[in-house]
Image 1 (cartoon, rainbow, N blue to C red):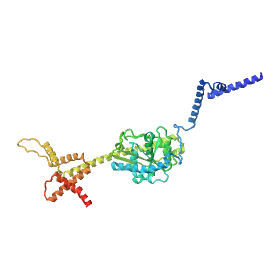
Image 2 (cartoon, rainbow, N blue to C red):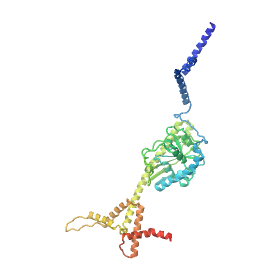
Image 3 (tube, rainbow, N blue to C red):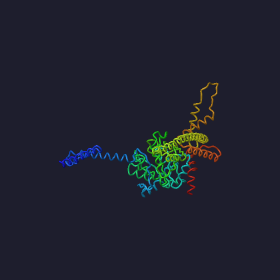
Image 4 (cartoon, rainbow, N blue to C red):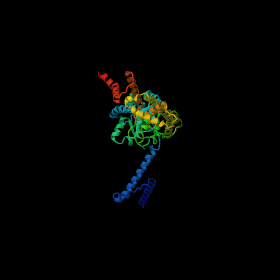
Length: 463
């Protein structure tokens, strides 16, 4: 009886322990049942549910103990942060591709288009004369898909573009620039770092950008995160990622903002190739100061999220101020260009009036216009009244403006003035050589023009 009572006691203790484990971990501990039903097919549901509960508990523990995407902290990036961008092959590709692409974009913007830059010395001073090892971060608005490299290349001299080490690093979404191995290799060769949309500010691409800053490099970023949806008319809010680039590096970078307008005309929404003959205006601002934000971090122990938001908000405010100024400058330039174009048209019209158009075989064409203008001004009057004749100055003015408008559709202003000047020269030369006005046929006039402008230099070189 004594042994039976002791066995009952131990059995009761085991049962109470089983109930405690079941209540705490919600896991049924029953070795007898497990031995009996280990190889029974219908028992697989029990083991699968038990394993799933343990797996869920492990995930909850990992989520609660480790920093997540919803929490913010300072993630340091060491200088020996290794990635495939540091390979020798990639550096060789960058040494070739960056100078070629950069100078082609520089010629395209400054040769086939017009770029007006204000405050360019601020960028050059920060880029070329900053202390050794001091990082540089430039921020700008994002209007068109080719803002970088076109705008960046237009701001740098060719001597800087020839050295790939001096040229910026930038970020691009993987679903846009790194779709396949070919595009990935190209964009890596022009110093573009991949980032994934929706992966947060602590992803590998951001770590790589901070690593470049830690080595004293230059990183360019668009704080808006994406292109403007209205062709650059408005600026979006700055994202929190730019705050991490400023604050999480080993040292505070020099942050230079600039805003541009006109790229919406060179690369409109939906266009596959850039256009030429457009005007781009760029305004570069003073470097942004963040010392007060850093002091607030040390004194008041501000949360990391608020620090990131404060930096992004300050950068956004500076970009909005520059946006208002650059729009005003662009409007003034457009008005000046229209006034200059109108003045050039009047000068061309005045020169065209001095040309002997019969020398070019166009006398009948011009006389027909004069006859039409005279017929419109003639009126029918009585026998006792004289017929009013149009004044010569008004007819000449209408003739010059009308013809210049027609010629302007086919020739550039400078070509038109050059053509008219050659006509004046040929007219005076013909009059001086003969001493009197004589009629010259159109074929002979063109022959004289070719001999005076084309054949003579050619004969002089080959004689």
